[in-house]
Image: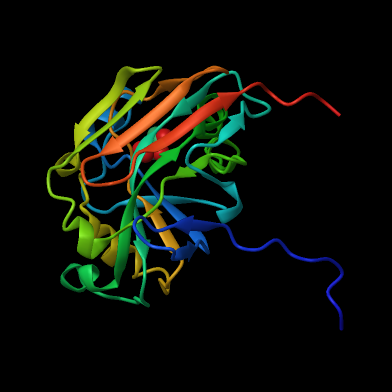
Length: 234
Ligand SMILES: CC(=O)CC(=O)C(=O)O
């Protein structure tokens, strides 16, 4: 039977220093993984275990894009994050095995309709409309794990129009990368093409059309986003 339409190809990320590309199949995101961010949002952190939400891989936009200010929000926020790309199958692995299944790392932005997320939280509803926003997962080219090493306590920071807004250390994460990979592998058969955004540090805030965002993690390629004008109706 013929397909009724041509499905879109999976989005792909460039790999720094090579012609390789990494197809993105799923995007998992960790919530409240930095104590200072949880506090600024008025939340307690859960040190027992991470929690997750997801974004469609089709929410991905490459670094350097101009992405229109999205519909149905007046409070679109930046969230700078370390992204982890999975390169091998992993199911029910321990933290000690996590390194073996990590393909690489990248700088990512988890752009968020904060007003819709807040409304969802108030009504105890899922966060999809706040988080799974078209064009809201901005990813820089990946760096292979062998070229990056371990996340350690590298600086993670984001500036908007040159002014630093988020500034922290990867060691500030409550659940570190091996713990996150191991924990997620209890629930999912992780596989090549999975991407994990590991949570954002404090300093999140609103953006407006014309803003230029630059996110940096020592040792990785910067992520860059320009906020475009909202799209016209109709
Ligand atoms: C409160 C949030 O927006 C959750 C999140 O995306 C993060 O902590 O990162």
